[in-house]
Amino acid sequence: MIGDTVFVSAVFSAPILVLLGMTSASAKERPHEVSGEVASVNVSDQTVVIKRSATKGAAELKLLVGSGSEVLVGNQKKSLSDVHVGDRVRGKYLDKDGKHIARMLYVSSAPTQPSPTPQATQPVTPGK
Image 1 (cartoon, rainbow, N blue to C red):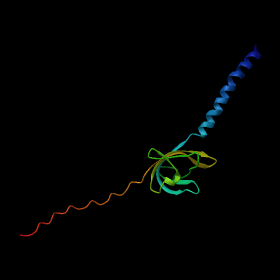
Image 2: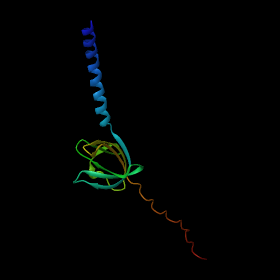
Image 3: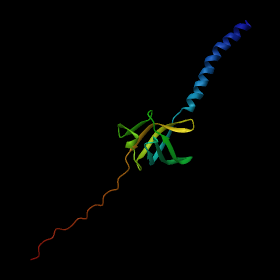
Image 4: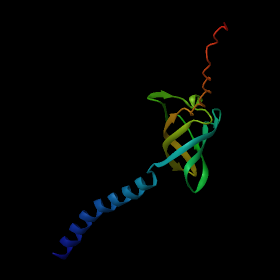
């Protein structure tokens, strides 16, 4: 009877240990969020530096934007070459091997400066 108890305990505890292992591994791969303004873009290095809006740690964050990253400008899939300094971005990234790897970047264009409004002019009436 004691042998049966040990066997049952081993059978039920093994799946729990496997599940606990999966939980800790997935916690390491949980994406982080970032939002801010694009400070620089380097297409040849496949990187973008984001000046964070709400600073958590470093004020700037360098992300690797590779083939597994998705860049959306508006609702259209684009590439890193479509991202420009001053654009507003928000996105998700993973920490792997000491690097920040972009999973998803949502890009909105930098706000344009409004052009000065032309001053209204009074029509000139010929003198009598």
